[in-house]
Amino acid sequence: MKQKTRQTVRAQTQTTCRANWSHIADFAQNRGPETVKTMTAEMTLEAAPSTSTRETKPPKFARVRTSLRADYDWNTILPILESSLVVHVGFMDEDRPMVIPMAFAVMDRTIYIHGAKAARIVKKMSKDSQVCLTFTLIDGIVAARSAFHHSVNYRTAVIHGTARLVTDHQEAWDSLKAITEHLLPGRWDEVRPMTEKEQISTGVIAIEIEHASAKIRQGAPVDDEEDYALPYWAGVVPVTTSLGQPIDDGKLLDGVKVPASPTNAARKFA
Image 1 (cartoon, rainbow, N blue to C red):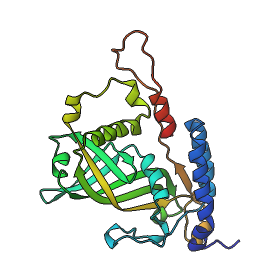
Image 2 (image 1 turned 180 degrees about the horizontal axis):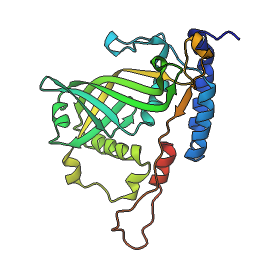
Image 3 (image 1 turned 120 degrees about the horizontal axis):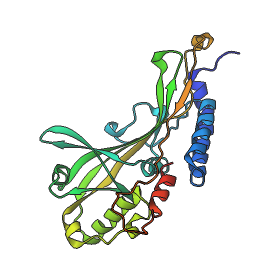
Image 4 (image 1 turned 90 degrees about the vertical axis):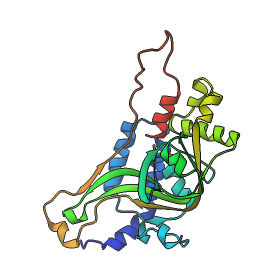
């Protein structure tokens, strides 16, 4: 049977891949990571690369080079952010580019990060600063019949925006709660309340989103047509992210049990 061209494969499998990955995301809320891992492996090996295109295009600096894999729809971008443990924040310091991984939260169309008020990133972004944020989820290592066509399955998002120092007391409080809850849903109500001193010593930065894009690759390798006749294995090695069992600090009072937030987080990031 004649092998399909790369372009045809991508076009025909776009809808299937997106539907499958959406199904896995919903399924993961109620099943364990091992089940999800098995589903991911089976689905990934059956599918070919999925791409999505949008008519809306941001400025050139915020545009995805490979338009077939680009998506500028917020409904596609937001789930990538919500599934990420950290964001990598790019900014300029003394005319040099800096990139720092940080905890974060998304509220409406604003991304919040925090740090000690003396921290470089907080001081440098206290005045309207242009920043670039990146989010990366790796779903698989794609092994082709040639090294040239090896790749990875990924879901990435790039955000361009303007950073500002949060000075409103309630906005700062809400954002710090959101950052805590992003990593451990429900944790805010499991611990003692934040003190005024703790809040004053913490700098909160809000990044107002100006341009956002997603770039996604899913599915099996696509080799050169003549290489399909070669006796080499090709496929996908799934990559999964899962949280382990909580380990206490050895200083718990008698009777203190593991709260709900670690389990909530394990479901969220499965």
